[in-house]
Image (cartoon, rainbow over all chains, first blue to last red; front, side, top):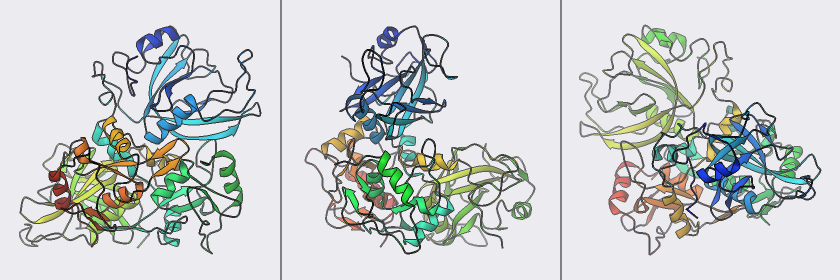
Length: 290
Length: 290
């Protein structure tokens, strides 16, 4: 078995068409013949196929909400159990943590505007922006992943095929995108209220141009969460606790106690009113490392 | 004086032309009549004018290396002293830390392909990706800023003009770009070597999908630094120390002692050889908070 390739596959640029899963597999664009997720828990996921298998998937073109696998009855295809964060599901979560690009292939069985009329189409690279748990239409808990189209130029035909070369963006740009955080005026006011101290650990980072903190939204912005960009949904955190908060390393209990990889309670300024509904939403959708 | 506006100015979309600095100022696109940087140390910089005043500026279109102000003789315009990280220079550094968009205006006096033939042209929003010190052609130390074109859609004509509305990207997308780090295979090997422990503090963050660490390049990638993406130029850091390292909060001395906001020495694995040349380059170009 050749090494797993993250990024474009040589000779198969974005838009390439395939007749069948066998042809996709042969090309190395999506190797498994049946599974929708190609990947391993150790390496991450390198490709997925959208073929309408899950009732809860959403396809907005440059943005996809994809449902993980598992918990379905082999006969009927119906969801009959909760999904676990294992196998392909864990692989996609790992790809999110590591920022690995995932090849997205759309199949014709989809009843969506972005689906091809026949066969399969390779639609380029996406990044796993976030993942969370939700109750599917079946009533069972499923893992959901938001994939965002990779902001890169399409592969040049004939590019080299080793792992690093198939990364679609020049390396320098990869390193750059990292901390281009654009905060709203709202968010900056919350940081000023806390004088840039982390609400979880009290850390205050000081650089040449002044202090640095980040804001985290308790109920995430954007569909399907649609959390508001208002002070009652915003926390001022150091980058470490922001990462832990976003990646299931720390959570906030009902009494504002910190759960998981942090101790004590969330520090809340007298003039900062946090909405309990948003905290509840967070607890229900974002699992914490036990 | 109206409040400083970050982002597009209503009625003046990207590509707008102006006859003179007076007209630019009247429009609110770049308010100072003489200074190249508009901004304050407290609020950040909202706009700059590129007009060829500095011999060390570089203009690659979507990427600009801009020289700070100060240290020039009023009569001859020649650099006669070191530049300080104060006033407009500090304002640009603050914009970098906070991720604020900067309006870029190009003047016809530039001898560059991207300059307009006459007058001034508003060329849209840029983000201050990085800043460092360098010896200018004059022999004096200047501050330099890398500005990257903001990956946004141009302003719709007639958009509202309050600060948050003039942010060009939908809010949800702003929050998202934050941690889309795309590491190379090289970088992932270094993180594995340290088992995701920070080389400055030993912290190891653990999320649902496994551990999380970031890599920092000692000599930055990309022009003008052109550091290599090789293990001898890479550190494994926690997000907090990555921010401190990038923003002048911590540095590495010749004996690998940590300088600034951290204590002790850099932890280096026996199988990880760090290039002293890269460390020296870093010390010479990235000042540390005293």
